[in-house]
Length: 595
Image (tube, rainbow, N blue to C red):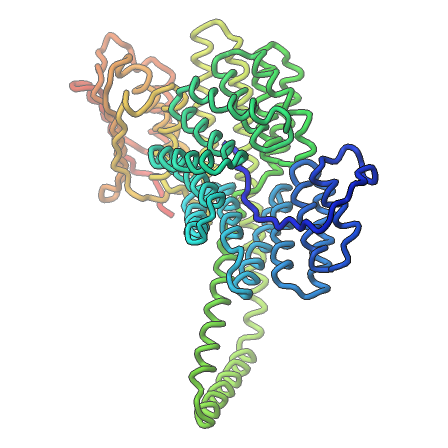
């Protein structure tokens, strides 16, 4: 699901009635024309800043360039008059525009600056900034951190008894829950938010609640219910086709039609989206649109057009917010918290200085500290220069290596997408199965490179996290839910180097695939995976309680088993197979490296 509507408080300054709408472009909606009318006759600088922000907000939904123009005017005027409140509002508007255009680092810096300004003037508006920071962390897929900020916003809105803000925060917390596997908690919050929006006639937030419910039912694969909530938004917003909720509903509806193989209907909805994407200037929408349209066009046999949109998708994805920006957000947040604590310490020291003697002692201590720092600086200056050069070089190499892993992952995903497109038009079952198995192997390798560029340690893979993600991906690929096959694991938190993780990941991919394809044949069962360090060896166990196999099944002749044996030799692993009760594979690995 996409980002839901933001709940930015905008003060609407109604000063007088201007009847001459002919002074402005006829393409502007009435609300913008009205604000421009007020601005034409307003002489008070403070009220002008408010009107600039109102126009920036209205234009942000349809005309990015105009919104940016009025935001810059608001920032300049608020600096001129020295009004911290309007400076905070104007900078937050600029942060929103930076975020929309994918400039996440600049957006994060502005939000941190806004928090300081809002605390300086008494905390007014902090609920808005917390909400927007939560959204920024959500876009980075850091859902635990996003929930913390949404919760801060919710607590303030609840204290202020603001129904609009309460409903919006509930929806945002629900989205965080939906991405952390807490679907029931997400559903409960969405229902609570929907009741508040209907009771208070909050139309656009109602659309956001509908989007959340649509996403919940899509996760549950209840497509009729998901489509119902999409249509609620599309029908209600049919005259406002440039809103985020309307476009999101269209894209979600097209995804449902794709799943049902109703490709003409999916294409019809996507064509409605394409005409307004450029006006919104939202990279996330554009990226999702390209991917969906490539699928639909390929399914309709329009391969040249499908390939064009697939390449656009690959290019636009590289322009989206990089996962490395997560660390930037944390650094900025820590920097702000440190500065805040330092201010508090200084205030306590000053308030505790009740006598001249205490001040003299404090000054003397400071002098000693300064002299000590100068002495240490002289001793370490030459060494620090060398260290700085080394640190800079290491940082550059680490960034380059992360980028290499990022590009490798992207290229592997493009290969997977092309295999997926090709498999749709192969009628031979054996050939189609071979392509699908090849696709899952490519995904297993792509997941390793994805984990490498997302983490601070770019030389090792955390196998517990990787194994769980790989199994969930395979469950989704074969359309299997956890009610049908229960997944149980005992995986040590081991960090393995790339040369160990890639063959081990491919082996795990093959073993789990065999379980999902052959072990149960539609019946319920259990899959157990164990990865532990046993003395000087690494031990991998994959076990199911399915039907097992016999010698007549010729399992040793399959390509997957041959691949497992080949990779096992590379890891100097012994393979033990037991099919007396289900099937159990135990690999004892001698050649591995922990990092």
